Length: 138
Image (cartoon, rainbow, N blue to C red; front, side, top):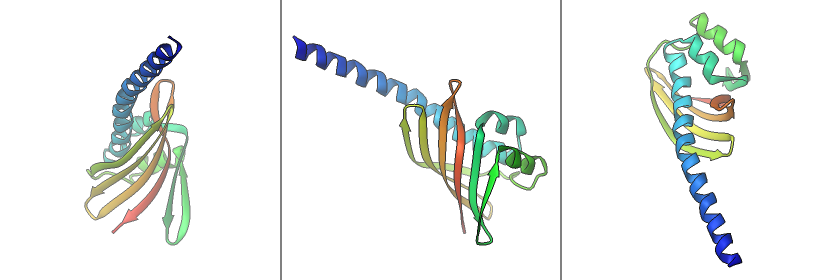
């Protein structure tokens, strides 16, 4: 009897986790799409929504490690220093661990190709981008 209750409990947990992961997976993918679109469209309101307050974007520029916080990223959007060009998107890896997620996303358009390692957090019921490690690809 105890074994049956234990197995039932495990089955319920697995079923609950897999259904939660399916909806979270869609929401994480949408957050990544929104991140791409906020730059493509230079949409500051979308950036405000999808970027976590502690957002950081790391990349190497002219051989030096550079970092942008949320305010700096949004400022560059407003000044039209980044974005403004439609890109395609491919997510090649995604892992969700409770309220945390990591993904590898490829954005391509024009002469620019980006491979990004993106970290997300579930905050207030919504998935937001908290960290991006950006690699420019020729």
